[in-house]
Image 1 (cartoon, rainbow, N blue to C red):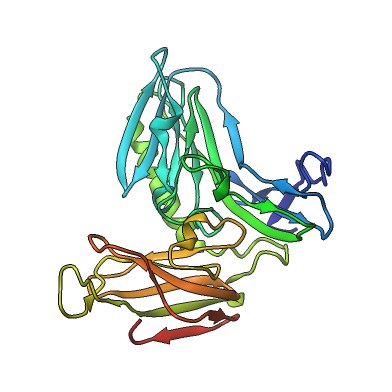
Image 2 (cartoon, rainbow, N blue to C red):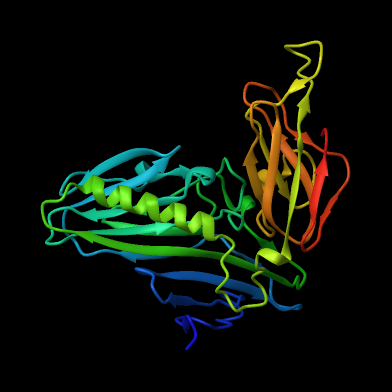
Length: 317
């Protein structure tokens, strides 16, 4: 018996006038306390013009008293939700910090946790610094695939002149846990963070059967060292300590901030400017970077072509 069971919830070409894309699927994997969901959006050549404003998976939990949790640099933020005023923008995170968030029914028996775990942000639009929602008031748990939040429609895919397109969003993992009544909610949060580490170690997942989702052997790696010249502060070049370095669709410096049709792969450099970007889908990219306290965006001259199994290295960028 296969370890994977597909449950096709929505797989449709929809109305070609209202939503001209194809959408897919939910997955159960044996031995997991939860389920995965991901979507493969595709457009055939010649389909109508269309702006894809936002897409997400959304779970409305039973109305009771919950605590909302999410990570921000792996610290803990708790918002108690009862009959008090609540606002979805309390739960916004930068893409790079959006790894695990969820809700705990702390007065139920047993205490129940509902978590959204994202092992990779490669599919999200706007790069690592774009903010997006994790929850609505309610309690409602969101898995944002992409959106125009905090920026506008120019950050979202816009299709003209019959453009064809395909992109995989996710997978994200909906994880559920429980503890005996009276257990401190922190125990469920700690368990969810431990589950996140397992998912990070398992990425890219081995179970998807779609040919549109490349496994580990079909991906590549890019590494190097970033050296910058901050003419406003130093006369010489220096290591780009803690820089964010990423691969995105070719474009001008900073263009990754409005990129939404392709994939992006970002890491933080160490104190010497060294970086390794793993699990990169095969394709053609530009290498971009920005450095804390240094003015401007950086882009390496020339395209970087990544093929399956590549381990590309550059001593200095």
